[in-house]
Image 1: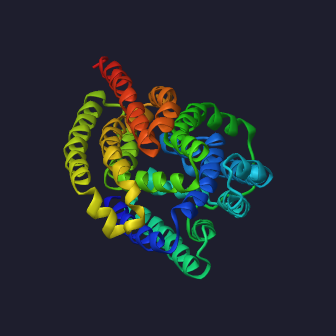
Image 2: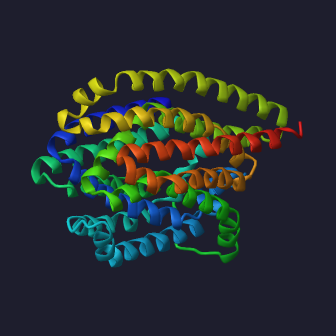
Length: 394
């Protein structure tokens, strides 16, 4: 999983470096609007089925058909909503250019709805080498198509072409080569079981979306598409070397924690080791990013992106804080405490929501970065309150 993240981040680095010279900050902002809508609807309708399938000891074949039908219905609904609301969204952000991007974006969830749910077996059964090959190819296809399309069109829509190509490959590969393959069978009691436990995952996902994208919405609404493009790019750069480390650890430790969840003392020891290792790893990354922001931006993006420098310096702290607090999420999920994850994310949203509008009005995209850090700091005491509460039983 570490190799996967390192490889995909190299591809992402090259992708951003090339596209930053082919496209403008405004075009990145137009693409960001489409991504905001897609992410929001995917989170709003998330059933939590992947988390459920990893938590359960039952075979995937028991739930795969029902999960597949639910996924298809969800994909159709998301596509319809994006298609129908495209005029309203483009008007809300005062961005007529985003209308075409939104229409094309509506095809992505429709295609993803047909992905074989059995892809979760790579994580459930700790088959991380296969996960590496599968995910890296998807990411490489996305980046390659986006770059080629940008050379031809010099348009924000090229980034959507990349996402579409990745979704098509993932769907076809999962259906052709991953077993067991799903059928079109639906059992209401199984769907109810999945959704019943998944409601906390859905709520946490919604709150996490609002926390990660609330600043983007405010920047795009109060400022303009160019400012949104600068801010989103700064956010991605500052997050790459830090939150990616935490994400790798979360994907690996979640299924491992599930397997040892019956031994609380062992689980506590594993969590504390993970927390210590993550803290010692991300702090140097944050310091390096803080000290060498301007030359890094000039080398990677070019001079027209120097407006991201003060934001990246601020957000380097955000990456460190979130990477450390994220270590608790797989712990909570492994013992079916999804409500803890939701509560932590809600705390972060409150810190962001109270400060985002006045800070953006006063300081622009720098204010948005400060607000994001305030939200992250608000979540820290709540996170460790639940950790201490959980381990106090030992």
